[in-house]
Length: 255
Ligand SMILES: Nc1ncnc2c1ncn2[C@@H]1O[C@H](COP(=O)(O)OP(=O)(O)OP(=O)(O)O)[C@@H](O)[C@H]1O
Image (tube, rainbow, N blue to C red; front, side, top):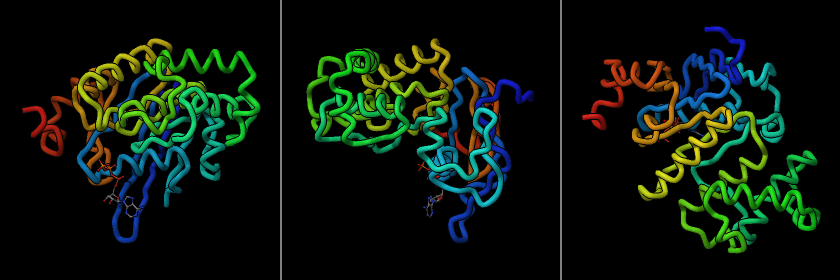
């Protein structure tokens, strides 16, 4: 495969926790502008792989190359500044601040290179950032609640707010760890629509997801991780038809 338009290249990455090999010789290439899903059974190593990509976990061997830059010695905030954002399984938001403030803080960080809690005083008077934050909240379907405290939101809405906090950073690569976990079918479908709209804008995304409806609605390519190894990769049709995948994972949920 040509590496020319690869945004992210994970090369030969392994990671052990004590005696447990969470990732074994993982190779993964993410093409610009695509949605790439990583699926696999519980404990397969998906979150570990995402954490390696954002610098939260240092691999024992191998490298992660983003946009031509080797990330080995980069801190998580530096990787974020390079253009990688991640929506976590447990939303990381400021519960005591309004939705608008939550979205404005990372806009400030994008502009000034620092993620400071007192950023709000600095940015609240800045109309351009406020307008952008309002547009992002419209995008994620939370504009009506923009003055509510983030802590009062439902779990699904908190996840959408966190997505807004990522989007305002205008990342080159958005990593989503189970973005629809805990959401109702209605909220899940809203999130699928949002992610489809982002795809039309050309944003590259890596998505970890257990919900096959979400995966097959969005993914251009799928990599299947099982016991720390990539056991299959291809288009949704190829992966769906792969007997190894059926055996390792899809069998039960696709019947
Ligand atoms: N910090 C850690 N210390 C020890 N073991 C860990 C740590 N993080 C993950 N593991 C183990 O590594 C393996 C891979 O875990 P990981 O969370 O990456 O899997 P996953 O595919 O994301 O699972 P799930 O779908 O359940 O979220 C599991 O066996 C897990 O228990």
